[in-house]
Each structure stands twice: as structure tokens, then as C-alpha cells.
Length: 481
Image 1 (cartoon, rainbow, N blue to C red):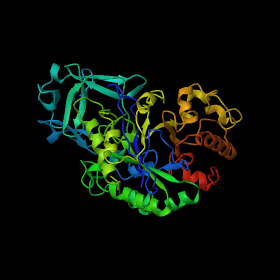
Image 2 (cartoon, rainbow, N blue to C red; image 1 turned 60 degrees about the horizontal axis):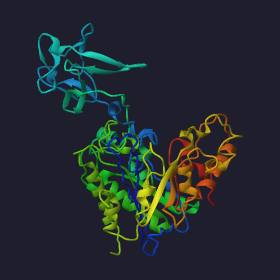
Image 3 (cartoon, rainbow, N blue to C red; image 1 turned 135 degrees about the vertical axis):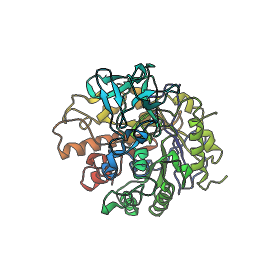
């Protein structure tokens, strides 16, 4: 059994140096000798698909997950008891206690029992004053270009924020990130609660974990030319079956099923730690609460927790026998036969880890290529674009050659082996026909097949057809046979 450990970095917004959001990659079922300093890529190369939206919720992949959640898990402010106490943010529907009457000339807010909202000496929002003064006067700051999004500034110059469901405080200094309504793991489990974490998706899908990916999907992958599967997981899996609220148990059992099915159909398995504690970038795939980024915050312990998750996942695999923070060491404590895969930060050059990885045995560098998010092909048409010019991702045609060198120039005997860990046959072009999409997919496969380690399509199942490899194969857009 060979297990591969993957460190994957989605740290677009991290500001405290280079922090990696580690991920674990496991490739069981194929006996191989220990990896040497001259990293030897797998043979055959990896042809994988990501099981996105299964064990880490991303609302855009399957929006119906949120159909049964009241108010889509947005909560109302409430004057507890109607007034005379604290302001909280824990109501899923609005009535009298959740209604605030404003004196808009001075922005003073009166609650159900006629008290005015103010901020006490401890910085907490309360509704106890019977007459308004400066402490009960707030400023409404509207977002430029979007007047429906507002912030409320208190007398101390700081903005109100819902610190927890039971604590609204005036201690946010403000920034340029106004956030967004997020549909991720936190919202879906918080919205349904612990008793029904995956209910209400409809009769045909009474349980998302048990129905979104099933055994026949693994047979489909095998029958259609794939040899591996990449499974994104969240940090809470290491606390299964009793993870911290609002996360719920069960993802570990689902992951175990994936290993069983993979073994039955001869597929390798990539376990991808897609969501790190505290959220590594605030995006929907990071499993966070509200778009905030707390993964690299000093004193949070989230980096250490991430290493613990990596080691937990590594220990669960049956092995023969992990420099510093990097979970490379956590993996190496348990196996010498594992690849360790690094991916650059979203905002960084894809080759930023080459100097680091070159000193470590068994390392792989991961690049993600999403052509529709790249300005390289802006303005191109179906007759002049990546579908007609597969060489557009070659060093001579692409404007970021250091990234592409990871695909074309890293050999088993240079610094590392390379993989295209995520790509999709979707693009920004008007009037593309089915044949155009087929040629676009073929062009990308031609290029990404040069990756010495292999590639993984994002994702297996998706309501957006071109993001769904199962749909693309079934409908003749992509063939791997």
C-alpha cells in the first residue's frame, strides 16, 4: 500500500507570511518500493476526478442542499426579551423583537419595549436606555455602488459585528472586504442542526452523504478510463463522530466507503484536506462561518490543528512502519513511501515552492489551471483559443512560463514531479457549440497529460454541466478511453 500526503494551499488572503493549507493525498492498493530523493512519478500517471461538494459543501455545486433551511441560514438581530437586555443574532425569522424602529435623522434604534440600542462599557450592544443620547446614536455606512449593504458604526468609531449568535459587539475596525452570503459546510450543518444535517434535499436524496456519491459512481469512473479519485475533506473529519458544533459526524464513515469502493474497482484515492481550521482563504470551499480568514492568525492554534488533522488521516492508513510546521514531517513519521504534494498560494507564482520542495524526498508540485478564470484567453474565439491551440499552455505561448515549467520541465530526476490538481472544460466564450467544447476538453487533456504525476478534473458531479465530468463523459464531450 502506498499513501501520498498532499499539502495544498488556498491562501489567497493570508497576510502573515507563507502559510500552507495542507491536504493529505492517499494512493493505496499499489505496492511500490519506498520513494527515493529522486522522486519517481506513478506509473501510469494519475487520471482523477474530484468529488467536490460531497464531504465539503460548496453551495454552487448543489444549491438544493439549502432549500430546506429557513432564510438560507441568515440570522436576524434580536433585542432579547423585547428590550432591557442584550442584542443577539440568533433568530431565523423576524417578529416584534427582531424589529428595530429608527430615528433616521440621527440613526437611533428603538426596540419592541421602547428602549434604545447602545453600546455598553464592555463594547456589547444592549437595549436598556429609555431616552436616547450620544451613546444611542449610530452612523449608517453604505457600501459604494451597493446601498443595500450597510455597516453600523457606534460612538466609539467601531462597527457592530455579530461575534457569536449571542454576542453583538462594537469592535470591528472595518476593511474593504464586505463579505458575501456564503453557502458552505458551516451554513448547511448550522441550518439543519445536528438532528438533520443532510435532510430536506427531496425524496430522491434523503441523505446527501449517502446519495450524492455512491458505489456505481466508482464503477463509472473505472469503466470510463479514470484510475484515481480525489476526495476533498474538512478539518472536522478528525473529530468524527463528534466534531465541534455546528459540524456533524458522518464524513469519516463516508470516506471509509470511498476507500472500500476504490479498492473494489482498482482506483487510487486522493484525500484532499480542502478546508483548514479557521478557513484558509474565506472562500466557499474552506468550510468557514462568514468569509473571514482566521487560519494563520497568531495564537489561534489553527496551524497546529491542521497538522493534527494531517497526522490523524495518515495514522488511519495501514503503513509498513512527518523541517518544522509543514505536515511533511507529520506524514513522514508514519510512512516513507508517501508523496508529499505542495500547491502555491492562489495569489502566488505556481513555482514558489520549488526551492523548498527540492530538498525533500518524494515531493510533488500541484498547479491548478482554470482557463475561464485566466485573462490569457480574454477576447479569444472558438477558432482562436485554447481549443484550437493546445500549445497555449506551453512555455513559449503562456505569459507565466514558470508555472508551465512545472508541467513540461520537471522530470523524475529534477526538483519535483508535477500534477494539475484541478482543471475544468468550461470557458468564457460566446456561441460555443458542443463540438467546440469537445475540442476544448481534448486540447486541455493533451497539455495536462504531460504532467509527470497526472491530473484531476473538477468535479465529478455538478448542477453546472461542464463542471461535471460524469455529465461530460455521458454526453460525449470528453472521452478518456
